[in-house]
Image (cartoon, rainbow, N blue to C red; front, top):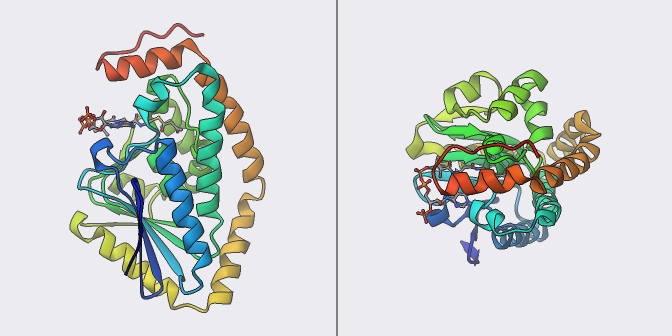
Length: 262
Ligand code: CAA
């Protein structure tokens, strides 16, 4: 049953599983502020629906789960706007992470920057074979600003996370599976079906036990909120730098950036 359709996000529910689809394929499902707010509304509807027992999150179109924060929107922002954008992303992805029911990201295409950060806010990740996942923000003169500096390290360990954050190099799904970044890799045409089947299997578990399993395992990252607050500040510093302006401009002009270091 289709529940809601807004400009950038779709919500459907069937058999206890809610499917949220980021629906901006023309911009590779980039997460501009309106899309983040639409996602917040979809999550609110999920929280209010007492028949939803698990959530699947995916992206529309064949190319992208999400290509991350919106580069065109960021290029038009003032130096001081970075904090608010990062805070909005954290707020919405925090709500996703804190859903009482389990969530499964169905990574159907590239998951880069804020797109990977969105998947990292889900409990489990099912990825299509061959898709690239990474945090390329460093190549734009930025750092991950939607929780990636914290949640990636929780999945793959500090050394691996630093390598991905410092180099900005993506990994393909198979490598992502080897390092523990994704739970399962399946053929691209099966990714939503497999993620939905996994979500349905979780939806059939004892709800009280599953809820407590989620709460208890979340305690391994009890200081995540402090780390996320720190990341908002650090993202704000990069956003106010000349390098951020140059990095975003160079991306749009399809050339190598010339860093000034300030
Ligand atoms: N924001 C806005 N628009 C984006 C976008 C983004 N992140 N990524 C792609 N698009 C747009 C492109 O501008 C293009 O639009 P037009 O057709 O109007 O020109 C359209 O989507 C298709 O993109 P490409 O032509 O680039 O497609 P491609 O197949 O050649 O490349 C790609 C695909 C490798 C994903 C490439 O688009 C890319 O590198 N995108 C940027 C990825 C990125 O750097 N993400 C991090 C953003 S910063 C961030 O997320 C910060 C944070 O943590 C808060």
